[in-house]
Amino acid sequence: MTNAEALILLVRTLSKNEKRSFRLGKKSTADYIVLFDLIDKDELITVDGLKEAFENKGKGAVFNVTVTYLYKLLLDKLLALRQNQDSDYSLMTQILKAKILFEKSIFPAALEILEKVKHDAAALEKNEALIMASRLELDYLHYLNMPDISEEDLINRHYSLNTALSNLGNLYEQSALYELLTHRIIFKGSVRTSSQKTSLNDLVFTEQNLVRKASTSFEAQKHHLLFQSAFLMAVGDEQSASDVLMQLNRLITEYPAIGNPLFYLAIIENMLENLRETGRYDQIPVFIERLAAISHPSQMVMMHIGALAGLYRLLLLLDRGEFHKAKEFIDRSEVLQPSSIEKLNPVLESKISLYVALVHIGLKDYRRARKTLVLAMLNKTCDLPIHRILRITGLIIHHKMNDSDYIYSESRSIKREIAKSGKAYRMESLILDVVGKSSYALMSTQKREQIWGKIKPRLDDIRQDVFEAQLLKIFDFSAWIESEILRTSFGETLRRNLESGIRY
Image (cartoon, rainbow, N blue to C red; front, side, top):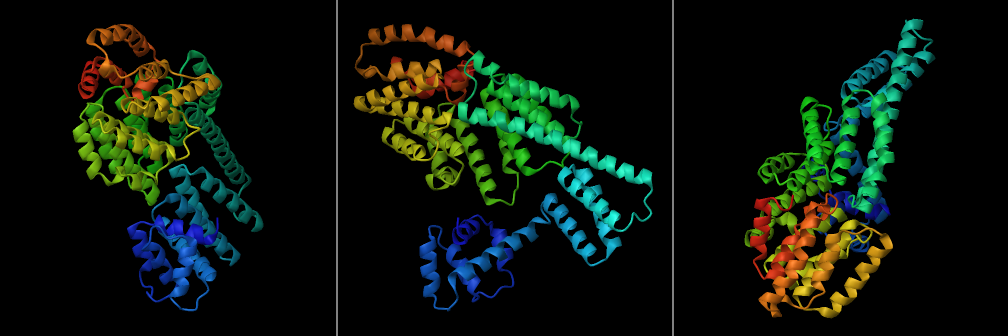
């Protein structure tokens, strides 16, 4: 990536406060401010377009030089702002100040700063900063011939440093296991069979062994509970996952100064998913409000938070079959518009597109539903499990549009994919069977009831399977199957299933 490309992306992600702080006290005629304004006022500008527009200003400044200078100024300003917003930035800045003071032979001041960094880092459980400050302090004391340091004091300092190193090593191992588990869930999907659950045992056993020797610090507890909640949700044990998530929530309450917004965001996101999966919709608005209250300096993070809050407000309507209210909410919600969701990570973008498309299906606006899914499938989700759910939903749309050629071709493609991967939900196979039939509207009531009599036992069996239930937690596709065959209201069937607890 060139500096110009990075600069354009950087300016686009600046918050209003960051832009205001950067421009404060600067002349609007300065070359780099002119360049900044060109980027800020045109969200679609390219590098070539920016270069041409800048050179047309006729100020004689060299484009590449100005780009480099502006890029450096922006990063310096953001770094200065973060020092007052994030303890990591603050601690690292203090360490660098200590190094400068030592280089200038102002030894007492340097050592005082390092002592304070050690104290603050220990209190905030910032092991990396604690280790850096402790090691630097020992280096400086050694250089100064150990002034006023007894052997016992030196041994205690080494012991404290080794303890911090050990704790950090354990945390890194816990993080590695959590990241491996997350990777498997993202790219392989939730557990579908007992054998797939068994395949996660290597991570579970290793994590349990780490927990036995880990400290009881906030960070150690956080990593353990995050791993446990992710595992339990992946295998379909929602109640146990809920208990673990509540422990995480209490942990945040007990250590408000140590937790960070991204960690809290992860907890709230998992909590919202768990509440929906267990049918506790009355509690979802509370956690949506907690989600909306999270603040972070990154514009991308704030976009993610806004979109997530919008998604769960939409699901409160969609899952009840209130399609008209859901459509009204989508129309007035900026965060759910295509221009907004295309800036999100591919998984969240695909989820929102899926649920928006399902709203259009409920309203029988199949062309709009198809357009929504096509836009979602253009992004890079083909190697993620959600891609197949998008394709299955696409089959439902084309079934309603009587596009038999597309259904035949796409169904064969999906079946080949299932056969190749060896991973499939029976619900997926059932949907393929249902959309493979000709229009149920042309069938007699007796014929449709005969078909339903054969399919209903399959649905009931699927609902009792803890692994099959994973797909129903994404959306109650069984409601669509029933309403399609029996020609009943899709929205009413969704509402009835929700209220009766059939989905859970």
